[in-house]
Image 1 (cartoon, rainbow, N blue to C red):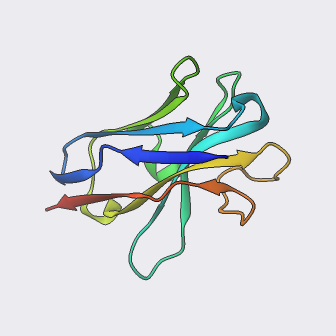
Image 2: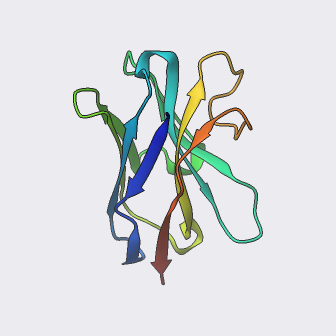
Length: 124
């Protein structure tokens, strides 16, 4: 059974940092992009960053240079280091496993596996 469990969300002031973690079970990392998505109230879910088992990464333009995605294969855990956070990045952040066959790994496909999400709130 596939499970993705996020942790590390919380409240931070603008310019601050947070590190999200996602513990996974039932997944073979080499078969998926592992990634982070977010959804703000009233908005669609959007891709933030993905990483492939060979270390190849993809980032949304809005987070390049500030966010870093990484994974620890031995611990079956995915991470997202977020620096210089902005109030408009307040959202629920979701961990996801994205099939390698998709055209755009930063797109929220229904066939992705999803975690339950963790709230990130950035105050001004």
